[in-house]
Structures are given as structure tokens and as C-alpha cells.
Image 1 (cartoon, helix red, strand yellow):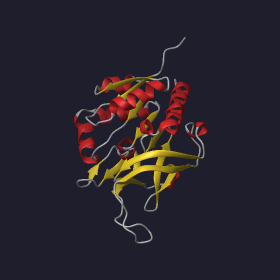
Image 2 (cartoon, helix red, strand yellow; image 1 turned 45 degrees about the horizontal axis):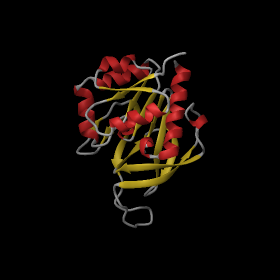
Image 3 (cartoon, one colour; image 1 turned 90 degrees about the vertical axis):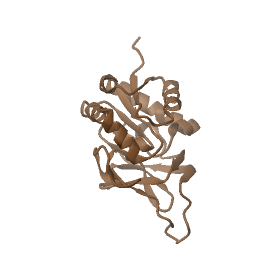
Length: 215
């Protein structure tokens, strides 16, 4: 009997890592919360979770050489799952606390929600609570998910991809924005599957199946 796929949960000083690891374990994976770049490169898959500010997270990833390890893992074809800030950091830059370079793996930038929605009504920021994600596109993860799922969100910034074809999940809050993006062996979501009950479990089960397929 083969061992469970080993997943590097990247520890760059962000919170929420242990709850993400527990959720991954419930989906049959073997999570390892690690800040060691060598561990990231050796793992069968990489999960980059996170709560907090884009600038601080990007600086920590660079200082600990974890950003390079994440890039190397992706280049080696291992499945990457980004959660919340782990989606935002994929892009070229974020504007939180000044413009800061991200990992540069997807073209685009991360901007704050507008003060008002399309109707002119004041928009409550951060976006907190349950919202419906509409999936569309082709990716191994999507084969295991329904076309519409409810997930839990907590964020004040959102990604603006330069290319619409990477957006595989959309949600409405102050207008439509990217809730899930995918490109090759990269899949990332703006919401928190570890806080999203049954729908979140389905997403992490889909990730487990994807990793197993790629081993």
C-alpha cells in the first residue's frame, strides 16, 4: 500500500497553517508545515495558505528563499494549491501597503476592493462571509467540483489577472472578480476551504486526487 502524498504547507510566518494542515489530513494527505526550502522542493505537492498583508508575506517568502522553492516545485510539475493570500502572491504585484512584487507566476496585480459597488452603494470591506463561486473551464480540480459552490471569504484585496483565461471561478462582490485561477499545475482560490465545511472538503479532496494522479 502506497504512503499518503506528502504536501509541503509553506510556513512563511502567516497564520492559519495548522488548521489548513488538519483539513489536508482529513482529505488523506500527509501535510508537513515547513519553512525549509528543501522540504518544499521534495514534496509531492505544495500548499501556500495565508492570512495577512501581501507586502509582509512577499518579503518573508523572499527572505527565507521559499519563493524560489515554490517556483522550483511548480517548474518540476508538482501540483500547487494557493489559498487566499496564496492566490494573490502568484501575481506580479500587490498594492497593499505600497506596490510590492509578488512571485510573478501569473500576469496581473492585486488591488483593494472599490469603496462603492456598481450601483454606487458603499461596499463593506473586508469581504467577510459566505459567497457563491461559479466554476467554468478545464482543469483536473474542476472535474471533482460542482458548477456552483458556497465558500467562506475573508479579504480586502482581490486579484486582477491580466489574462481572463486563467480565471476558472468567479464570484460577485462589488462586481465580479476572480475567486479561483488555474494554469497548468497551479490552482489557487481566494476563499478559505478549511473554513468552508463540506464544500471546502470537496475542494481539498479534489486536490488530493489531483496530487495522487500526478505522483
